[in-house]
Amino acid sequence: MSLFSSIRGRFFPPTMTHTTANPLVRYGWSVAVGALALLCSTLHAPLAAQYVVHSWEAFEAGVPSQMRLGHSADFNSLSVLTYSSPGMPANLNTGLAQLHCGRSGLVFTTRKEAKHLSIVTPISLDRARLGQQGRALYQFDLYYPGTQAAMPNAAVLAVSTDHNTDGKSYVMYRFGIGEGGKKTYFAYSADDKTAAPTIYKQAVLKSGDLTVGWHRLQLIFEGQGTIRCAIDGKEAPYSPITEDSLRNLTPGIMIAASPDRPLSVLADNLSIQWTAEDTPIPDSPWVHASADAAITADSLFSIHPGVKWLEDSQEAWRVCAVQKRPILAMFYSPKVSPYKYLLSIAPNDEATREILSRYVLLKIDANQLNGGALAQRFKVNRLPTFVIMDASGTEQKRFGVAPGSTTWPQVRDFLAAQ
Image (cartoon, rainbow, N blue to C red):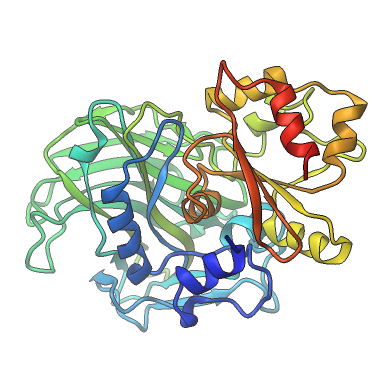
């Protein structure tokens, strides 16, 4: 199976492909492509330890015409920003931001006559699909400029498709940041024509909770009745909340500002991920003290001389093209128990380091958006799974780790046989 043909030709129309020759580039799903995800996730429920990317809009190809614009939003108040444009902050597209936010994002521009703006995708998820222990992550990434006075009310929405049949109503859950970055709040509106929400909770943000840069706002649905509210995985003090009235929900973003102070607000990665299993919630990519770093501190899957695991697939492809070494891609997730089992059996010895040094090593967190999309393309349904690809991007073979039965000699023989 070729990476190039799998990702570019088979799953994405020509208008969605990048011009780079790298077949491992980051893609966001347009609404149209998200419909394919909806079909696939309907036919194939996620297996243990993995989240399905149900819908994902990364605004790489502009503002999709299929998205519903709400409040005072119109195409004059929405635009797409290229992160590499002159004068942009460096952290928009360097390091983790380059990996997770790609080339561009969505800018909301409020005006005196349009102080409330919102967008909603047409792809919904039924909470019944989560069963009793599954989870769904409604989320988007918000860029915080660092000036509290310029911070708008920014919220992630989960809008009911059962109630909003007139195209104007907003029966929904929302979680966001308000009062110039001073507070977080949760609101459940059973009837948008009523001034006061049915449920409203708020809490003061502590100093240091918001740093300059990207942050992920999440509404997390658990089972059939629990809702959690988190920024970068850190829950608000009023979370969790029990509320099960709204069932079919689609994700959205709401931005509001004071009418006397128009603002421009940058957002990216509006998405839903879900699993029917009791799977740990993935770390936000913007958490700098990564749990992965702590887990792998003494293992072969951290940084060692001669054994460097890349996380940027574009960088891995560049190295592969120059050095003509095959890529060893490890699909994993740092929090899941099968990966911890792999760490427990992997020896940190010179013989294994020598085998690994034959490859360009790439770690793909299958429970992040980019990694999850690649895992679905390659039909990876067990974590961790090793996939070997040659310099042309064609898969050669794979090996899935089974906790309790896989031995390290089996893994070693798989790696050494290439």
